[in-house]
Amino acid sequence: MSHNPPPHDSPDLGLHELAEPPVQFVLAPPIVRSIADPVVISNDAEDARTGWRRMASRFGGDAASGAISFAVHTILLVILALIAIIDDKGPHGPELVLGPLRETLEEDLNNSQIVLPDVSISHEQQQASKAIPSEVRFPDAPNIESPFAAPTVSVARAQPTDLFRETTVSDLLEATNTPVGGGFEGRTPEQRARLVVARGGTQASEDAVEQGLAWLVEHQRRDGSWHLNHQEGPCEGRCPHPGTVGTSTGATALALLPFLGAGYTHKQGKYKEVVNNGLYYLTGRMIETPHGGDLQEGTMYSQGIATIALCEAYGMTGDEQLKPYAQKAVNFIVRAQHPRGGWRYVPGSPGDTTVTGWQVMALKSAKMSGLYVPSHTTELAKEYLDSVQDSGGVFYGYQRPGKDSGPTAVAILLRMYLGWQRYDSRLVGGFLYLANQGPSTTDMYFNYYATQVLHHFGGSEWDRWNVRMRDFLVARQAPSGHEKGSWYFVDRHGTAGGRLYTTAICTMILEVYYRHMPLYGEDAVEDAF
Image (cartoon, rainbow, N blue to C red; front, side):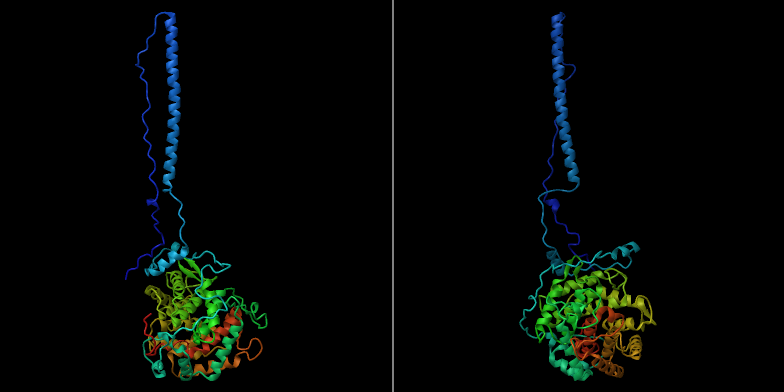
């Protein structure tokens, strides 16, 4: 498959066709009098004086005429030189006012041609690629119009989409060796109730999910956003342990994901207004760039999480107003990939496993929602995982080969989504390593990824893991006060993300039974990444 450069990166506006041709000046040769012209001189004194006066008058007039001619021609030559200099700078004509960048990007979006990263670029080019962007923009107000109603405005209920088709639990849970699942089908009220029972959830775990969502509702700001420092909003400092990271797009998307995971969208469910207002804020914060829709606000973590939220909301509802925003966010991830396949905090930087994890999951959500993801992007992601694997792919490190539990949990989940079969010996080895680690009592980031790995793999190891993880979270949820329904654990992720981050992550862990369908189930949407 060939990939041509996308149009409009270096637009040819045809300005050379608009300029009038320069005026051509043709200089007539000056009139030169011949010294052979006859001059008659008298022999007498009077005639001599008269002759000398005539000669003086004649040659004096010629001198004045020559001086004037010389001055005129000099001026003309200067004008011609100026015209030549101006023409060297390019043709000039009427001033053109270009249309907004959005129109160009819409045309780019409709053209699916993607530039293949060149993995053989020079060291200088790799260094230059790290400078995209050189600074983070924080607009005071949304710079594009959101497709959603302003906050506090309800949205009409939509008809169920094909993604929510009816299936039987036995079909959903039938194991296969090839990963073809991971879709959103389990998020309907009917499938959610059935899968909770079939996959190991309880009424207590579902109550904990609803309490977690209720806490998130109480901490949404008037503009539809959430912030990791939750105390600055409606909380007014009543809940302890605020986060320290400033990105609002990442926090808003992270808070939206548990609602979407439980089947609540801006089109259906009791939290329509909450989700609608969050999407209104998120889309309004997107910055249009030649590289796609920028939702970073300082870090590619936010870009990945926000893209997942947009893709899931679009995939679950089929809302066409969301589609261009989701696709542009995906395009930005594609363009931000390092030539060696990974992603890190800044677009174009050499990757790390945790940031790469969010980007790959965003691309998978995009594929499941019918959006365009170029195949070379996921192939390069596989190459990045190869570069940080140890023991042939059983263990993984953060930026180099290693045996770290967190990066291994992230990478094994990505290997599942990227096509490794269920009984691949490398996958089994990583799965058993995580199962033997057991759930962490503080590191919910590790638990979030490891729980998904164990759930997709299934078996007795999943059963043991699930009981410990589920009951621990139910027991540790805040039971009273303004923090009722939330979680907080002291670790490096929890300290930075605070109570809002921890609550969102823990709620999604308890949604694992239905949030994503088992990857190795026959009824899941077959979709080669």
